[in-house]
Image (cartoon, rainbow, N blue to C red; front, side):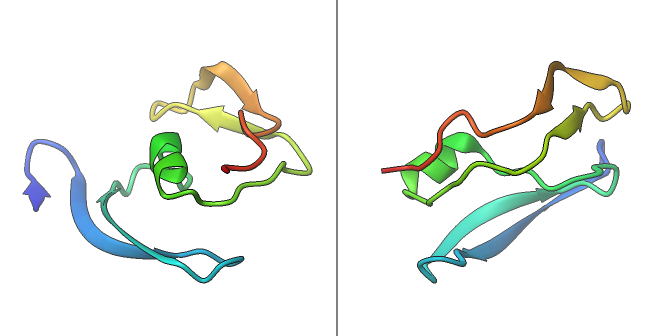
Length: 82
């Protein structure tokens, strides 16, 4: 579905987890202005996708390239989805 008011495209995709090889289907928003990849925490929790801590901090920026008010991401807000 093409959104003519914004520069974005919604695509059906499948995610393959690297640890369990489970496939998850989802509608994804493609936005060429984004400078990173994003996934919704609620989706991760609902699909029981395993997560782990990261080894170094990652700055999080808004679409206008300003630093997000939440600051840097030094670890997920949860270590593992049960």
